[in-house]
Length: 237
Ligand code: HEM
Ligand SMILES: *[C@@H]1O[C@H](CO)[C@@H](O)[C@H](O)[C@H]1NC(C)=O
Ligand SMILES: *[C@@H]1O[C@H](CO)[C@@H](O)[C@H](O)[C@H]1NC(C)=O
Image (cartoon, protein in one colour):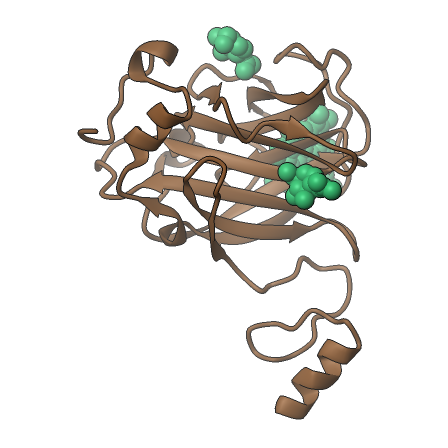
């Protein structure tokens, strides 16, 4: 086993949790890790979602520890190669009837847009989820664009078969979509976007992104209950 791991390392291959090199164009299955972001202070669960053999979108999710039994807030962060014009995250793991987080670069930041699809056509605006960009963690450089936003409304919704709530301490299957095509009006959160390339799926372990000081971290990053009008439900500061 040691020998094959070393060989894989020499060959520059990704190695799965089972010690086998992963091959082909399927998303890599190395799973979720914990990532502590020095810039925002949040602890995220992180999944690197490969969309080609050499490039991935990094998705990160920070949750409050001891989330209430109903809706709870999250912070979503994504790091996206500049070759992509927009990305989408489907919280229920498919395109239709679940909160869709859509984002596209706009100058030195990104626009995050709340969408909902009732079919396989351009998703419309969704008022059930609200995004507020943190005052850190939003940037663009020569290779990537990155956004970090609080979402109120991403973890509970009414789907095709009734009420859904993402377990804050469990794993669930998410879907993502992406395109190299750009948003038509990048500064608008209702911009039209071109259709995606082949969508894909991953399982994220949300238990790896727990934050006992979630609301205090939001405040540290410029988001107070008063500033975005969404009442905190995550407990005392
Ligand atoms: C921009 C407008 C969009 C159009 C025209 C569109 C169209 C479509 C079509 C035609 C399919 C079926 C593909 C097939 O069966 O081979 C599909 C599937 C899918 N789309 Fe979209 N889509 C759009 C936006 C989005 C967004 C924003 C997301 C967000 C994540 C998304 C996520 C998915 C997923 C996960 C699937 C896989 C099948 C399913 O879950 O229904 N799409 N889309
Ligand atoms: C766009 O932003 C406004 C102001 O923050 C917000 O009220 C609206 O719900 C957002 N729409 C979408 C589609 O994200
Ligand atoms: C560019 O930004 C991304 C996302 O913040 C970061 O991961 C990467 O290290 C940055 N690259 C350089 C050269 O600074």
